[in-house]
Length: 339
Image 1 (cartoon, rainbow, N blue to C red):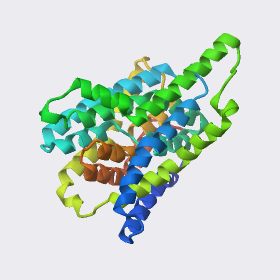
Image 2 (cartoon, rainbow, N blue to C red):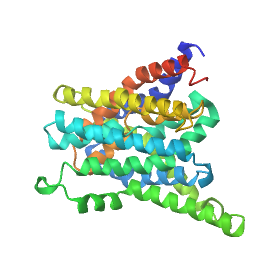
Image 3 (tube, helix red, strand yellow):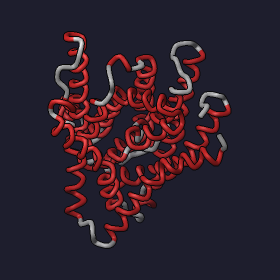
């Protein structure tokens, strides 16, 4: 595939996100999005729409047997390593405690669901998309647990880390609850096939009306979240947050893919992980895509620096078109992605 085609693929994956954020900013300037709407929109997305989207995504995984446990385990371990590095970098570079969790979160939390899955499909076809979707059933819950930890550990009352409070935040987090319910339904569906040889009851068959409502909520999640995000964006904040923006963007778009993808390549050479033309696009989706839109919404709800979190979504999304293009070119040159 020509380099121009790769660039167009990266731009087509990123541009809709940027345009929706720009539209939200424009509507806010025109007075069509009020402060009350943005505040309530944040809560709606965080407490209802995003949990519905994550539930449906996990629920739609065909079977537990389809999970490639070696690559999933590798991805999970790599995410934990990047999380630890993100925390260390945040402590070393950011004195403001409300910004530390946001910087740490940016290092490991990619936009896997909105940008990653379509990007994997564009790079490796249906097989790569399937691998990415199955990986998401395990890595998305892990990412959200790590996000709660990173956003809780620096803003504890009295300045002391409370393990009890962090655990409560994890349990009460709507995104984690959505994933947990999806996993429960997936396990129950698998158990039915083991006991009766077929699925006796499924959400999208016997209670299709409920599944339809959840799907509708899933479908409005991305556009609504992006409009709210754009409405909260403030250009004047860039100067004040310049250092954190540069450090966090470098962590998300350079450090994370360097660790995640290079590590997979080395593990594959050692025969410890099976990586091929379907797995590498999924790893690009997991480690090289910009920071998740939900990161800004969660930061706001958990009393972290919402403006920094919003800025990071915008800037990592803009620059990811360049970094994804370069990463794909390198992988193609090595013969790891065939397209």
